[in-house]
Length: 81
Image (tube, rainbow, N blue to C red; front, side, top):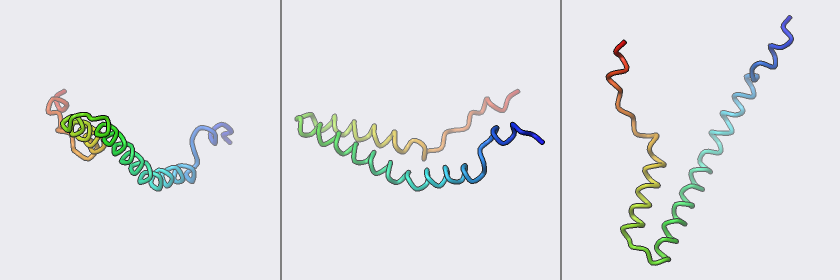
């Protein structure tokens, strides 16, 4: 009987509860990030900043939010051994 084996890894139910919590909370985090981006752009416009700067900030925030959706090109040198 292995005594230390139970403490080495998480039980299956805890892993699935973490996955469920992330799946349920991710839309809330995306909504909060969208609100934060809107507040940042609104404060730039209220401060009298140029519209080009607000456009650059909005594009940067959008790029950071959606960079995971764009597939990365495959590295052709990785296959060479």
